[in-house]
Image (cartoon, rainbow, N blue to C red; front, side):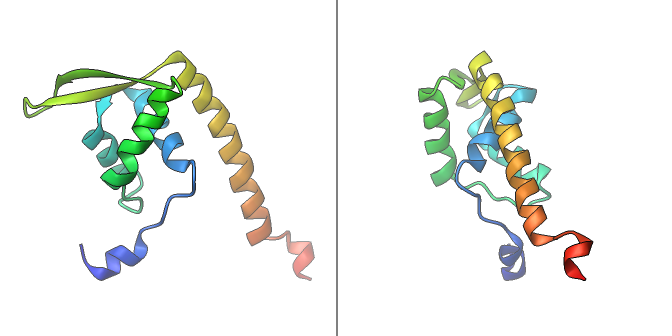
Length: 119
């Protein structure tokens, strides 16, 4: 990756990685590498998920009962843990989505004030 690419990447806000993992697992169970790759791919490579952040997040989500881990085989026939969203995780994803929309809307209102304020 070039230095220019590194400058284009954006750091995760606290709690955002958990929400993105839950959203990724909404589609289907996946192993850690596939989760990271899906987040990177779906963000057009703007978001990079480091293993040092991903695996603590996965363990945190398991402790909260939002995901479950199962042993399985990856695409290249290697043993891997596959993570699956739980019903409690689906409920939490809906909560996190609502929170994110409120947060993003609030930031947008501050960054782009109404036209009348600019006059």
